[in-house]
Image (cartoon, rainbow, N blue to C red; front, top):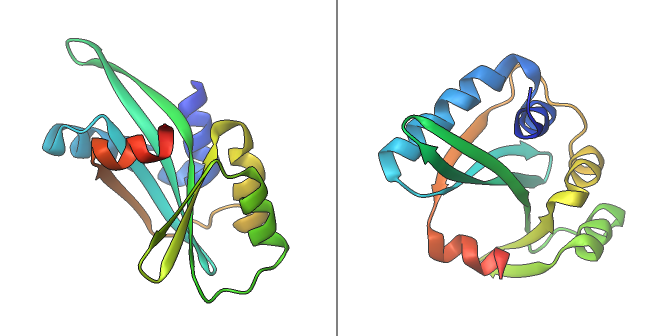
Length: 140
């Protein structure tokens, strides 16, 4: 199991790992974007793992976990969880009634554990393509 699979397993749970990996392939081939998010709801937070997929030739590719994007409603009170996210975030953006915080890879497990804990077997996981223009906002 490579590093990306370990992080995915941590975020989505081992039971859903194969389904998520298949969804990564489907989204990549359908939309062609090298940036893909794997998202789940954690109470009042919506967290998305940001992955960059790089072709290696033929059917092979490398998936690199870049960081995590945490979304929270703008009316959510400033508590210890939000303070931790703000301290670790390198980019903060407002999206209408929500705010998104990009946290680099090195703090991913810390943030996911504090906000979510371990995933449940029935948790809904979303896999989505992210436009290159949107991803570069978080990565620049």
